[in-house]
Each structure stands twice: as C-alpha cells, then as structure tokens.
Image 1: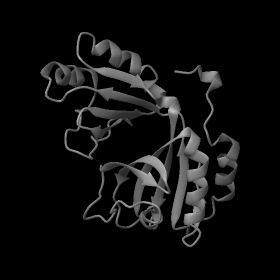
Image 2: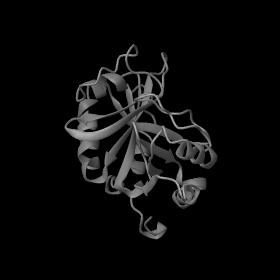
Image 3: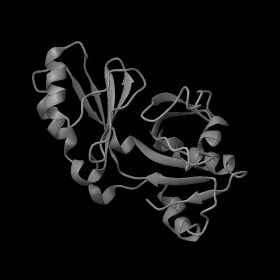
Length: 210
C-alpha cells in the first residue's frame, strides 16, 4: 500500500467537502452522492471446493465468504465481502482498523492455494442514495435494478455509462430509497462522477461529506 502521506483520492481536485457544505440545505434532492475515500479493498482468490482454503478463510475473516453468485456477506464493523466470481471475492473495509488486513490475510493463507492482492489504491467508491438513485443508475446501466431482481446485498460487475464498475446495493428502503456503492477505477472516477451529476439533473442532487 502507498505511504499514507502520499494518498490522494482521485476526486480530491473536485473539492467535494466544500460542495457538501453548500448543499447542506438541499434536503429535498432526489439523489445524494458522496465519495468514500481510501477504503481497504482486497481481492481474495481460491477454490470454494478446497476445504483448506475455506477453513483458512473462516479463521481469518469475521464473516463467511458468500458462495451464492452476485451476493455479498452481511456487514461486520464496516467490512463487506463481495462475490466477484466462482473463485474470487472482494473484501471491502474502512481504512481505520483494517489498514493491515492484507498482510494479516496473507499470513492466514500460508501453505494454502490462494491469492491475496491489495487493490485499495486502484479504485474509489461513489455512494449513491435517495428515492431516485435507482432511476439514475438505470439511465446508464443495462442491469435490471427493480427490487424483484436486484435487492439489498446484491453485487454485479457491469458497465455504467460505458465505465466498468462493481455495483453493490447496501440498503433497501421503501421510504428513503436504496443506497448503492459504485466501485470505479481511478482513471474513470471523474468521468463517472460528471455523468452522475448530469443524470440527476431532473431529480436534484445533493453532495454529502464523507
């Protein structure tokens, strides 16, 4: 992982914290958006059919690996595990308290056929919420996001406005709308943020602080 004093969000130059102060009174906006910076993101690969791998994962992680396609495990102290494929998972956690998670996991899989890769600096997270969040995403995503098909804890790798993203629905609220975490590569972060701002014009957009 890069040295802490060198870390910079890919959207830092947009001064979103200042935008959040100005938008504080926009409570009637249909969509709220924020960047969640510097999250720990670790790719774990191994065979779910390998008993040694699954035993090591159970011992090293606070929650079990999700085995059903396109799902995530429940949150424990801010940590989620997202199913990315039959032999791949993305572990997401706040930097505070989990900064050394990659090294701990590497130690937990010694002698086991597995791979642990820290990808924390390669992507950022854009969190979208509100009553019109689903409609906003549907403008640029071919995935059916209707609650009958896509609900809380669902995960999918897809294109959003032609940018490759991982989309994770983290809440399902009939009153306040759904909340989604959008994992996007650094090189596409500003483009996607700009697209989301444009896509929310008809609903109203409120920028939130982290």
